[in-house]
Length: 274
Image: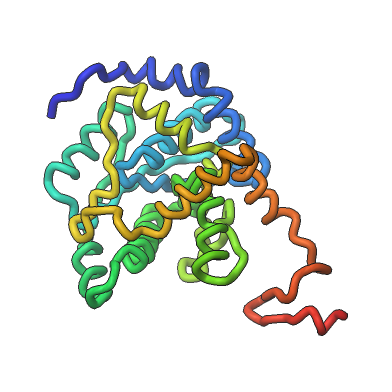
């Protein structure tokens, strides 16, 4: 596979610390510290899909391990859910050029998700199956944490998706304990990193990251997340702080001025406390 103008790995790693320090590395480190994501002795599995987000996360985690005073171990795992040969080849190529010692394992997630979706969009089913597969692989490797490449834009888009389409108010948490895999915790170290910065960083490497690489849908049309992404972009033209305000709203819920809430799976009405 031929690539043009691919940076040397030392230059890529230097750019994370210097060129992208303000927009990527600093908010990444601040997120890890604020939400207490890494503890001494942790063994963290970094999930790599081959996309721009997971590749950026992998490099960030390498830098964190190199410069952090807290000792921890890393495993880089990637699941091949049924990629076309050229997509798997690109995944391997990019990881090699970025110095990421990835361990790839095979699965039939694409095929199974399509069958179980019964003609409907398989995206939701696929995401759940991939998550479970990665949890299982992380556990096999003796990891106690699984790091995913979700970023700031994913977080606020999730809030809006839930409000508009699900009729509830919840967000993508920076970390959470797995309910099905005992002893495993999911962390999102790029919680405060904006997608735009990730795109700029990946473009600067000269590498071409995978997009969705799905062999089932092969397109984005009809995806509600893209609609919400465009909606937030439009709202920002009127108020540049719309995105950060959406996140702040999840931190400033006033229980005295909401109609109801759920706790431990039980729903409560404001009249109980009126």
